[in-house]
Each structure stands twice: as C-alpha cells, then as structure tokens.
Length: 185
Image 1 (cartoon, rainbow, N blue to C red):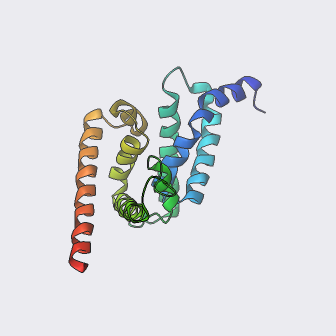
Image 2: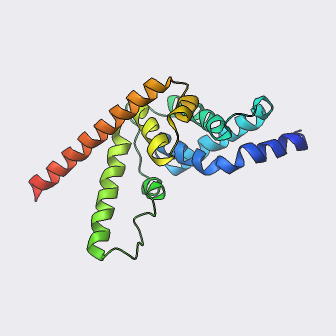
Image 3: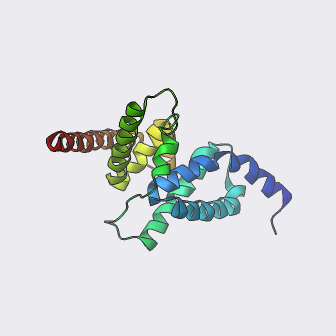
C-alpha cells in the first residue's frame, strides 16, 4: 500500500504535467485512446519510482517516462512502418487558440486556416518518429533544448540537428503538398 507521503509527492511532481504527458503520448502513438493508455502506464511507473525523483525538472522526468513507455508500447503494438494519426484534436489542441470557432476570422479565412492546419497535421504525422518527437517537444510543448536532451537522453547537439532535420522535412512535405494543390487547381 502506498504511503501518504508517496501520494503527496506524486501529486506535486506528476499531476501538474499530465496535459504535457498526454500531448506527447498522443503525438507518439497517433491517437487519443492509445495515448491515454501510455500515460496511464507511465503514471504507474512514475508512482512506483517517485521515491527516486530528486529535485530536478519534474516535467522532463515525467516526459522521459512517457517517452520510454510510448516506445515500448509502439514496439509491442505497432509495426515500425505504420505510425500515423487519425486524431485531429491532437493538432487542434496544440495550435495556439485553435482554428475552430475563431470569431475573428471570416468564414473563408477560417476554412483556409483549417485546411492549413490539416496539411500541417498530416505533415507532422508523416515525419519519422525520431524527428516528430523532437519537433513536438520543441514547437508544441515548448521545451528547451536542454529539457529535450534530458527527456530523450540525447546530447544537445543531436537534439538540435534532429530538430533542424525535422523542420526541413516538414517544409519539404508542406511545399510538396502546396505544389500538388496548385497543380490540381
């Protein structure tokens, strides 16, 4: 049975970062249900390991557990070549202010924004997972390079190079999508 002290420590260290944990898990697994399963497993692991957490960065500590749990889950449940997302809410939740229901946009501008959001969402989802996770941690979760390095266990230089490569791949994919749309019009 867990002690009250262990529960309090878990509440202080883990609970404030559950939204970030779920966001990362959704992006890595590709949908809400699988992301929730991963976060649940990660929370159990975090609870059991809470005594080993020292006064470091609790957000990075939790997301490292979520990341490792997600990769274990993916190895067990998904073929390597197939990791996609069918969850529009993942991107919309990550977009500042969202694109739905923005009363400041005209209907035409709202449609363009939604189309752009869907293209961006698809381009991010199509990135190889090693690049997608770095991009999501930096651009959506707004982690510092140091925090990303701590979460992933990678050197900061590798984080920076993967982020650069992820951004370049994203721009290439979005450019290709734009060129296709221009050719079809």
